Amino acid sequence: MRKIIILAFITLDGVMQAPGGTQEDISGGFKYGGWVVPYFDKPLGRVMEEQMNKGSDLLLGRKTFEIFAGYWPQHESDWPGINEVKKYVVSSKLQKHSWSNSVFLKNVAEVKKLKKGTGPDLQVYGSSNLIQTLLKNGLVDELWLKIFPIILGKGKRLFDKGIPSAAFKLTGSKTTPAGVIVANYKMAGKVKTGSFA
Image (cartoon, rainbow, N blue to C red; front, side, top):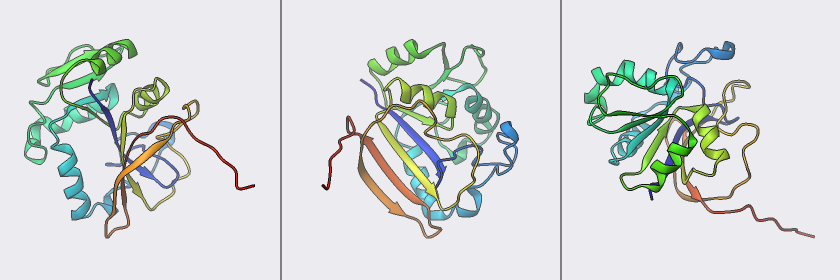
């Protein structure tokens, strides 16, 4: 079975929309695109480079795939192997593309089948709508978060309404000089409760 790993840049209030550019995703009137840039120092770059070069396949929503397909094919020197890696795209609208090694999935059932198969782990970047679907269907194994020291108040969030409760175990953490907390979690089952009374 393949693991599904969410890699996300998030604010302190959980916003993940348009981290990398002013025009990346302006839906809903979002005006803070590119909010990670002032905090993206060399140590964080090394973390990202290490995580991006784990030999994993990608699992993306349509919008993120289209952003990636418009940039990465011409910038492979910044992500060696990105053109060769398998890119699984969950979309009911897009079913083919010229970017090499792109495979299209129509629904959650096909994602479940992919997860049950053999092969490298599946890394999810961006893809906020897809992440909500994966979380709601219990398909997420790990979260690799980069938590930035800002609050935006609005925007697409990593954890939105309707997400089921779950417990996670911290498997690694560090803080960059710019104040970004890098925290990796793996699924740890159901939420446990107790009382101090």
